[in-house]
Length: 452
Image 1 (cartoon, one colour):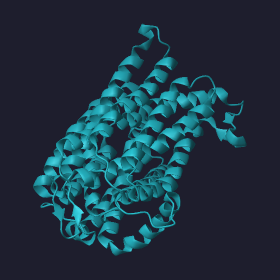
Image 2 (image 1 turned 135 degrees about the horizontal axis):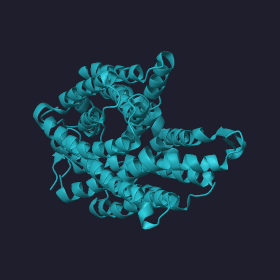
Image 3 (image 1 turned 180 degrees about the vertical axis):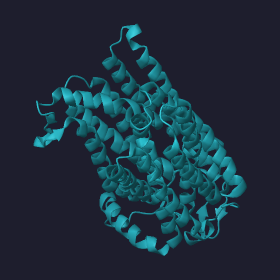
Image 4 (image 1 turned 120 degrees about the horizontal axis):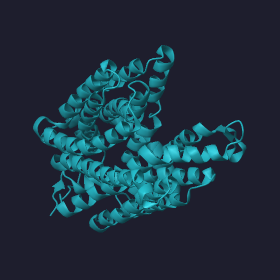
């Protein structure tokens, strides 16, 4: 049985273990797309297909626009992120005016999964098919995450939220890492099975879609649909109310200064995290001279160590509070990029050690940030605020990589470029010092956990 928060009139989560475990499995399901497709296989494979279609100048012409073969995949990634910025916030508002949160999770998950399955047919010089499939898959991946995150306040009470969020992140790292390990083992031995390398990549890409589709069944069976959190105003349609509510949300957020302060801190330090994830292999290859097998095995190491790190930070937050745990993780992030600056080249053992340290704090920082933000959301606006959370993350994810690129351009040193990212961790830490999580929860009409 659930109880009631008499401050807000909101039904508190029942902490149904079956529902929580089902929720974890969506992270297990969709992380296969992040690891197998985005991190390892699609970029180099699609770039090879674009190169096969390019003219003598190395250019292709999607929609008549000249694009260098090596730039096509990054441009498609950027376009998918840009579309998410406009798309996700409206979807979140629509979800809060309907009882369709679970239905929308299913729709976008399966569109993304089937688009990923379609990558099996990506061969020859059909680069436009590859770009379109990735665009759809990445856009719907982000949309499904909005509705997945919005279930967190429904299924976990304030005192359990850090642990539940951390366990979800841990499941994602384990699931994504397991499929990636299987795919890498298959790819490296494909020729001994008589499978050409190109087909091995296509099978690996499609396997991520199949994994995503199959394991999404579990959360859809376990999660319970909730009623509409707010009635649709007379004369409104879901699409128009989504745009109207988005504008109201931006105006109303000024009433929640602590939420805004936390969001600003998160955007800074998470931007640093995303840059380290995206650029660590470039740093390892170009500056430290790491070979491809070392880079790939480090990616696998990160997946499995991050599983334990996410669980460890969930445990730590119960002892010292989520805010102190996040601040401690930012100290470790700062130490990690400082260590990278001094790391000698050609030392795989030290590179593995750096990867393990990063993995330890990777899941914990993000999981606790999600659970802390969930405490700051006004009742009935979960999907709407989590859509802004996702949009904000994607809308600024260019800043730290740009900072990295400018630092390298000015100094011609990857070491200075990587250590420059500490600015984002330090700035996020400073802002986080001034965040009062208990006050933020009270401003939003929620109950804060015992340890914040």
